[in-house]
Structures are given as C-alpha cells and as structure tokens.
Length: 45
Image (cartoon, rainbow, N blue to C red):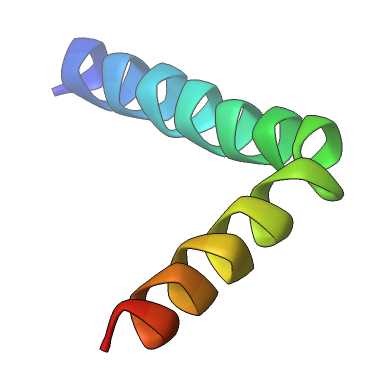
C-alpha cells in the first residue's frame, strides 16, 4: 500500500505541476486561439 500511495502522490504532483506550467506558459496564447475559433464558427453560421 505504501508503494501505491507513493506512486499516486508522484502522479498527482506531476499532473498538478504540468497544469500549472501550461497555465503559466499559455496564459496569453490559449484564450486567443479559443476566441478566434469561436468567432470563426460564428461567422461560418
């Protein structure tokens, strides 16, 4: 059980760290692409 809990903690830390890294890196790029895609869909309709 201790081995499983250690692996679980490592996976959680990696996932949280990856999400935080993506959030810091793509704060300005990601929402713009999403907004452009939504605008393109709206114009297509």
